Length: 473
Image 1 (cartoon, rainbow, N blue to C red):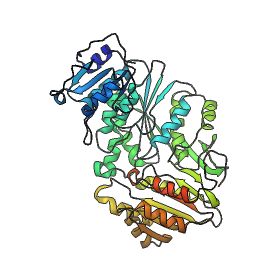
Image 2 (cartoon, rainbow, N blue to C red):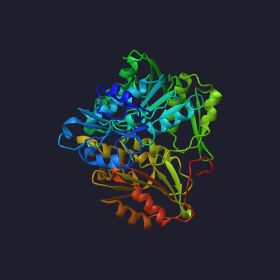
Image 3 (cartoon, rainbow, N blue to C red):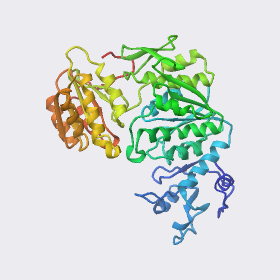
Image 4 (cartoon, rainbow, N blue to C red):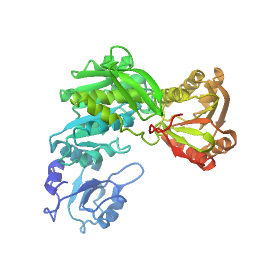
């Protein structure tokens, strides 16, 4: 909840307010989802201009309007109340969010990394909620628009702000940190991702460590993947309390003895604490250990950590196992993709092999990899030989290099390339047979849910979702 005085303080301007007795119940950048009493920020972007939707926002009950001063010079705003003209509405949204973050005492936590951010955030929220009132990023609201919207919805009862931070260019995490001002940071890992924006793995590491620089300003704690030497060595340069997690000896929270049992993964942390979590993704043991490190930092008792671990359910689209008819199962992990994430997911997929079940991987383009894209796709293709796949189906222009690399190493029994999801669905409808296990992964823009939908339509008998600890594979 905000008052006109709050907005004036955050934006450091006075409005043409005609009703300062009112309060604002939230903030919005989308007139379609705006709630009565919200402040509407007219964001200007490459594909849209919020100023074109001021009337719609007013009709839906917006109580105030933050607009770009230069964009509204020719607009008649006499019918509008509580107008806040600013230089840049995107920056203004961030300033209001930062004002909300500092309006109340709380602990702010930031989570970033090349893979596993969302699941790690979910683990963190689950563990922290056993002792604190947590306000966390929902869905994929982890960018320059989503994060400030999340922060602006803080309430006085909240004790923890848990922010997921995504980026595809240098400086983005720094900007998000200027809003959330994290006291504790978690970096899940670094992989080649968004290379078009970053340029190299070293630059990706530097970008993720923008979170470390922000935590340093707060004299805080940084939790990092201790298995990644580049990340750890550079993190040590910051004046923070450094905590590590991972599978190698020497980590503060070391994961060992990872196995599967009854549709769950079982593992130990520090050869002392045993967990059984309802997921089939082996790499989630690492994500959980990062969250456990945070929980211990926040002095949450172990019994509460164990209790929370039993309540986890997989995030939709992240190594989600769906059972179709004829004993066919699909590992739907198609939310996004980069080389490291593809290989670690395939490792978990390959270990689901059971008897004579055929293992089929469907891989779509990994986007935003820049000039190295073709070679990175080929490198993943060459690495497939260790997974003993029966078939590889690739879709998209860039994904053809997956097939090239796989052929170089004779990595798969059968290799097919298709330009479109429709052609993949048509092929699978006749190729897939009883008992097959299928893996789907690609960048979000590849829309592999279309392939998933096609499989469900073709083999819909008895379809269900797994990964809740109720079924074994």
